[in-house]
Image 1 (cartoon, helix red, strand yellow):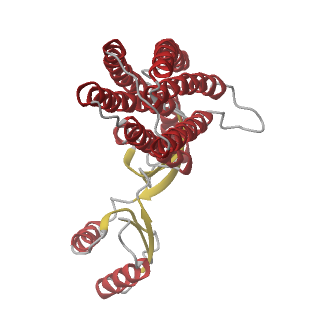
Image 2 (spheres, rainbow, N blue to C red):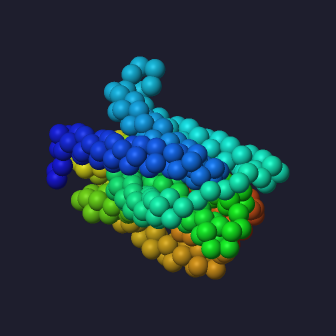
Length: 378
């Protein structure tokens, strides 16, 4: 076994440290930028610069929420919540998305009011230099937070990073508006504020759609599924592994199930030793609590080989049919079991069932074919 329970706990602790350190750094940076921009915006009567300052202040709130969510998500499971509190991180991301949305709406509202009732804009070169400096800091901060968030699989931290990165685009718009005023004495401040609000609203949409998707249930990362399949299929005594389902209960916390194809000649005791060792290794190495189902495989049956060839021919010539597994001929030679995996574009599952039953009946009229149709979940 390559990992221990202690190493899993250590990894989770390291994850929390990275999230907290990144969040505190973001709070410090945004506190400084927010104060500078609000002072400059008020002194120059620039709604665009004040809006940026307010947006920076909201970034501090989102970082605080990220830390709170991470802390709550680390609570131990209870009788009321036996799978733990990991999904609180996704709920935190949802709240962050709502806050970004409200910020965008407020900026849009203020900018439209300025279009209807224009005010005199005052801007100087010093303020412009500070805005350019702010743009560089926000872009670097955004890229850093996104990288750290992806590293530790924190959707909330990635959301804060995406907001920070969009802020750099917002700053660029404000700078262009200010340059236009300094060079041509034309005030586009209100319109720059409107464009700014659209970028903020787009960020809100991205964050909300991502976190809602996580709460509804999405396929896990392909890398994790591939690693689990490789480990299980390489285990002595396992012929194949199929039908994997993984349920996410927070970052790096999964429960799941997978069906194993096992030689029908193995005893229950032998199978127990195989799956018990696998369960422990998967739990300690990947923090996945895995449950195993069983398919009996009788490859020693002489007729199975010809059946496999005919089955493969049907799969090869049938659209939307990805693969098959769990082929088993009962000991009384009367029942033939098989499972199909189909893609999500197949609309008529019943037609596929009837086509296959007719096909097999034409070749093997003595068998009662029992077919299960399902989709892939990972």
